[in-house]
Image (cartoon, rainbow, N blue to C red):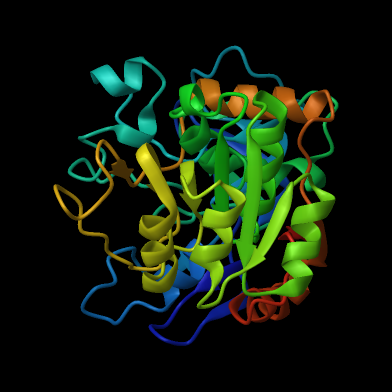
Length: 344
C-alpha cells in the first residue's frame, strides 16, 4: 500500500510503498477514507536527532477516518463496512483518567510505550491503518469523512480548551482567538456555537482574518505591535476573559498575557515553544494560565454532533496521497487555508 512516512531525520515526508498492516487480537483495520495534516507533524519532523523519540520509519497522520476493513480476533461490536473517526490520544485504558474517557491525560501511556497514531504508532496517512481498540473508534454516521476528519484534532483540541472555561464565556464577555489556522478557525465556530461571548480574532495574515470573519468572529485584529492596544480598546480597557493562543510562539504568548483580564484564563494551545511567567505581579490578579492537550472521547462525540447540526465545519483543501508532500510543504509555509486533508 501507499503511505506517507517520515523516514530520515531532517528529510521531511515521503510517499512510499509498504505492506498493508494486519490487525492483531482486539484490533481493527480501517480502509482510510481521509487523513488530516497538522502542524504537530512538522513539529515532530523538525526535531533534532537527539530530541526525536517517535521511531523511524513513522507513518504520519494522527487525524484519521475510515471504513472497517478487517477485524482481529476477539473484536465484538464493530461491523465490516462501518465508518468511523479515530480518537487519537490513546491511553492505558485502565487508570482513572482513561476510565473517564480522558485518555489525553493518561499518566501511564508514555511509560507503557503507548503512542497516538502518527505520533509514535503507525498513522492514518496511508491506504490502511490499524486501530488498537474499539474504544478509539467514534461512529461517523452520515458525516463526510473528508470534511470531518480534521475535527478529530483541529476540532477536538479547541473544543477541549474552550469547554474547560465555558463558565467564562458569558454574555458580555470577550474571547480572543490568536491564530486563525486549522485549529483557530474551528475554535471561533465553537465559541459562537456554545456561547454568547464576543470573539476577537488575531492573526498576521489578512487572508486568515478574512476567514475568521467568514466563520463568525465579531472583530479582527492584525497581530503587530499595536494589537494589544486595539484589543484593549475593543474590551473597554478591561481585557479578555478568555484568550486562546493557537500559535504558542513567544510573541503570541506575550500578547496573550498583555490582553487577559483580571480573573481571566489564558489557554496556550499551540506548540510554538513560547513561555509565560505567571504569579503575583506577573499576570493580572486571579488570571490562570494552562496548556490543554487534545481532548476526551466524549468531547470528540460532542464535536461531531456539532458538525451534524451544521454548527461547526472545516475549510478543507483536498490532496491525493501522491500529492501529500506538496500539501506538507504548503502547510509548512503557512499557505493552507483551513486544513489540508489527504484522500487515499
